[in-house]
Length: 233
Length: 185
Image: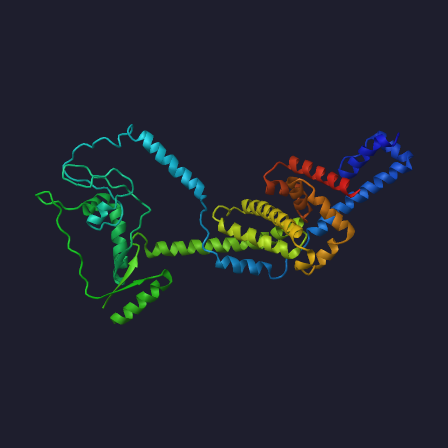
């Protein structure tokens, strides 16, 4: 019975780094049974530690990392992962906020008259299409009469694709960059011309006799350029 | 015949080149992390599954998931911590489904993988009892026990991996070892 009360203390001492107090030390010195118990407990914990360490020194097979690399190569480029449920929730919240706050922030208020139509855009101008492209949820007036304010939502992410001869790509890229820097020029170009009688001037479709349309990947970009230069020569 | 190409005028050749460079930098960084942490992922999985081939499958899946989210995990310590937690969780799922499968099917019908040297070492009576005892531990304590058993992992490193204070690691480790001892007595 006397030894029983030391049992937990002995196990605790074997499990952890704590030293035995003087009273228990004195008992162990006198009691061979408790000395043996302490030794058993210490052996058990040592076996546990060794067993765990042995388990955790295992190495994967030689081809493991190579297999992972091969799998990674088949993966598409990493991109930010967005939970579709969160995206849906965010869109719903935005719609709700707009529905509630819309009338208060003047979205429905008739805008003040200006001297001519004003179109705000920051992407590639392409005649009337640039104006129609404001279908991203902004307040629009499809009649586009002079004296009314027409607003097209800025959509920085939108990057329209355009058919361009290979030797004019750089020139077009510079032109677009310049337009982005000079927003007022872009607005002027993107604004449809209105005749005196209030109608849009007609834009005839472009007529190109024979076209071969190719989608250029970046890898073939330079090769195509070189080939084109050679053909010209 | 005039040849035209479909391009995005907002993107110049420089932009495309910069994007390509960014992609290769991302892959290079992932390669480095793979070298550093591939074995760690395997060991964590093996600590749960007690089986090399299954652990490799789980570690591979965790590493692929890490690659898919690599834009968020470029920070070294964040990557390690995320990988350890994900591997542990995937390994637990795998162990659970394996147990369910074992209950459904007879042992002879399941192809038993050839044991490795480590498997044989762990298949001793004590090793088997130790594995059983570990499965009865709470998940948090179990992960602390596994990570601190990996050579060279200090308590501080385990704490960093699990985003918990060192004191928490110490107490979880202490109680986990005591529980194991109770099961093995």
